[in-house]
Image (cartoon, rainbow over all chains, first blue to last red; front, side):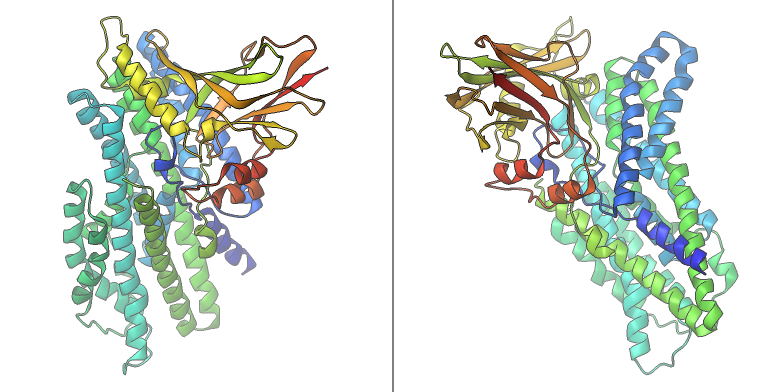
Length: 361
Length: 211
């Protein structure tokens, strides 16, 4: 049991995210997606080492783009470096993996679905970076400040989506079960009830997501208004009291539900990818940038996928821990993990969005 | 765990690299009067920053574009939180700067690198005494990584005989310092002294001593 507990702790610590230094404060404007970190000493040392490696790979990218340009066979050099950069980028502090892992925990996703979510959001992130540079820099010949503004808009939208996702999950996973338990209904193993309520809730929530995706700069007030909107949908009373159906838990990814999580993570392009894309464009070799961005995305996606699988394993271990005591405890613990994960997403989203808005547009 | 997360932190890793040079200029009275710096930015930053700007057939940038860049950067660097990423101290006291001058940005289309040069005069020139004069250069947000690797990257200009610069690279950033940096408000007013106290030893330090 100590092992299981340690697994839970290790994953939780790894997923500790950061809040970004408000970028308005820095004299030199390039889009910034990384951030600082918070955690114990050994974690800071680890992140320090990771960041040293990330820097190591990043600084060689320019040479690798040129090498490919001179010799087609050198393409693998750039792809390898970009992949490694992506891996270390994902291992370092960042909120993406924290949200994916929490989402997976809150929704009792399988390891396979968690990995799929991670890969898809990383792919979307790469495509957004490619699209942004292709349209703004290549087609419209936009300047750096214009690209920074666009990136910032996408960031704000992404953070807003995380807040909306968190609020929605907190309602479904924490508030609603709590209200239900406080009410006249009997103390049932409630995990399944959430699952159900959630499915009803997502119809309402999903409609918001695409709207925000198209809106480059959503008004600050708009995000918060999403939360209450879901409540009506969530309130359709599904008080099933039977145990969770394994088929449902292990079933195929619910696309509409997962879509907002993928969008929340993937909307915000990685600064490393943007800068490499612009550099490749400046060398008249945009395709190298596209390949590099995709390789970075693959590296990031696979790494976050591995972390998501770890999170699933840790969640399972914690539930088994509870199951040793009793079935009721297992359900209670499960519910607690889901509620905590949901709350975590909400708080993280608020922190990121708050920092973003405080940093000035 | 959530309390830990709520700590906003400084940038964990650099996104820009600057090959820097610093020349410490003395006045005829043998006092340190100004710090002249050249900051050569990495080529990815060069490509990104010059994206979409109108360039000549040879890839050169118009003079007014470069002037505008210099003006914008110097304005941003002049904010209290940035403080030109430079501190000059003598006898444990931070010396005030006069308005910077001679800010110039050059663009080399061949190697895709931008260079910002500027001169930061001291409000009151200072003669290095037994305690020496310390010049610290660094970015407290760790967004920019400086390197003083080139030969002659640190030099004295017009110094009396017996004066020598000594360069010391920054030590590794530790966790405690990182937390202190993280606690810095985003828009501080009276920041530098506090900041310099925290970041002791994390800077590129040029120690000027005269015998």
